[in-house]
Image 1 (tube, rainbow, N blue to C red):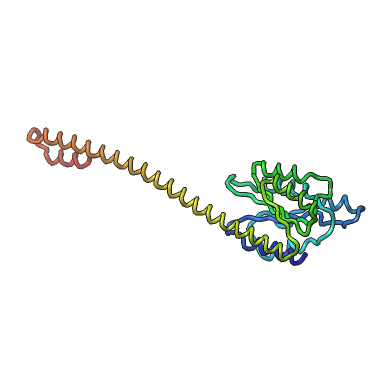
Image 2 (image 1 turned 90 degrees about the vertical axis):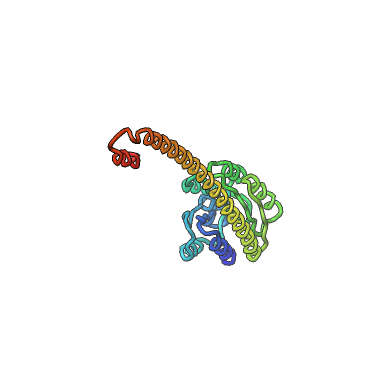
Length: 241
């Protein structure tokens, strides 16, 4: 578990700058016994609230729980949905959920249903699941949940495998982030050029009007030349016009 926590911290610490994260744990109270099922299935908690990554605070969050209890996977996805909806900003953010589980739902919930609702909600979160040393039947169940959430399922057999898989995910995110920056830059440049063209169109329109008015004033001045005595006053009025 300590190595798994280290892998999660390594993943969170190297996400692209500006990324907001939160950490949610589930089933971490009580024990694996039948007598503790109710309390364990009811336990789901955000131990690191949505925000920028802070090393010491994130480590404190990781230290708050140990591997024990049942698996309220569906309830934890529902909680993730609630927190993402509360943190929703301008609607332009991309929301990703990574679930690390060592087994299938054991609290009578429906993770496929919850993952689908989360993915199709206003926050449009993609649900990715990593199965930690899960048997074949468990892998199939977790894969269905990930597919319903619009994400992918991966299985790992050790903490080192988990660390490797999370690093692959992080690199993929960094590539997507860089592409988003490039696309945003291109879009901004295109908007800038459009606005520049509009400004120049207005400038040329005003320039044409200026030339027309200048021609009219010069024509008037030529017409009045020799007909009035106040030539200097006429020159002054022309300049002001």
